[in-house]
Amino acid sequence: MILSKDNLNKITAENVVVPNAKIFDLPEKVLQFGTGVLLRGLPDYFIDKANREGVFNGRIAVVKSTGSNTAEFDQQDSLYTLCVRGIESGQLVSENIISSSISRVIAAEKDWQAILDLAQSEDLQIVVSNTTEVGIQYVEESIDNNPPTSFPAKLLAVLYKRFQFFNGDNNKGLVIVATELIPDNGTKLGEIVLKLAHYHQLEAKFIAWLAQANTFCNSLVDRIVPGKPDAATFALLQKELGYQDALLSMTEPYRLWAIEGGKHVADVLSFAAVDEGVVIAEDIEIYRELKVRLLNGTHTLSSGIAFLLGIDTVKNAMTNELMVNYIETLMATEIGPAIPYEVDKNKRDAFANAVKDRFANPSIEHLWSSIAFQYTMKMKIRIVPLLLNYYKIFNQVPAHIALGFAAYLVFSRPQREDNGLYFGLDNGASYRLNDDSAPYLFEKYSQHPDNFVSEVLGDEQFWGINFNHLMGFIAEVEVLYQEIASHGINLALRKLNAAQFKEV
Image (cartoon, rainbow, N blue to C red; front, side):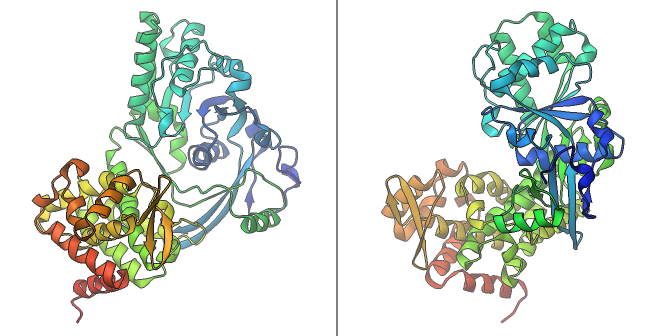
């Protein structure tokens, strides 16, 4: 039995949340650009929950921007199951929800006119997007194309059609929430749309309407949504649920959608009232800092260490006493106090505890090798600002961050190059370095193998800062690097723990 609207009444499993038939009659209030699992597992999750509680009472029309095949959604009436698995406040969570938030999926290549028709709907209130970081780019193209190629051009076409149809009525503007993983995503999207409007020499009244009637919101999304599980888990879940669902997705319990906005945004996004995971605030920078530093920063600093220990996944690291101690102490004593933003300690500690629950999630296969993707860029963006602020506050070497840097350099030193690909070596095993800085690191290591640490960390142009101004940091990283290279990461971790607990 395939999951579909007609088969809902045949589902007998007691552990499945099944939607009420009345939900299918709700109007389309949201136009969503993107079909990915993150949108289905976070924004669409919140809207589905609100609809079930009779709060938002609106569904989502989804735009598929690449390709024209929507059969996977069509044959299931756009229904899909979210299997929530993990740990929340130390307790195991297991929940299956059939989401009915999506009304239909429209392929822009095949039916662009349907999207323009939706722009003329009285019910439409919201646009949500996740077109990846590359999606928010300025491309000079005609908005009369069928369809325009870029997302900002598509959005401008929708807004211009709406402006024309409603004769510039300021009450018909939309709340536009970008979820792409770039800072100030909504602001950047709004700037590009405005620039495109000027490029097309659209009338002054539209330019004014675009700015005054519509609200472009920055937002931050935070939820691990791996999507479809491995074949064995997928088969077990389908047997447990009693139906086939090609769109079934796994997700962790933790959820956060922080949206920048005031009362008008809160009124339109009324679904926020049903879940504390939706936060609407005038300033959401605190949520970005907590995520980027405590979650992403801890991931980044731990990835080289865990990999060199031979630990494959994050959840397995949380069964290793050395790694658990490193992660907990790193967050509590170095990252937390050095977040370059004023954060209440209780809020910081609560987020750190949630991070530990998320890391220990037994249902999420999060590979350390994947976290080490673009390792150098992540160190620059996530860790360097922390390091600078730590020195500003304490003016001493942060031992755990130093070890993270040393492990990064051991992991990232390319031992060989093969047709433009670079490879590291650990205990005789070769691994691919997926890092745009690998050619630079290969050159440094090839030319200065004995001075690799000082050559890399001493390059102010490469890092954008002068590590020599951070008293003792390069020297400490050098000592740790040599120790890891000569004796392995295990000994370095044990020494760090011994120093922390003043053990002999």
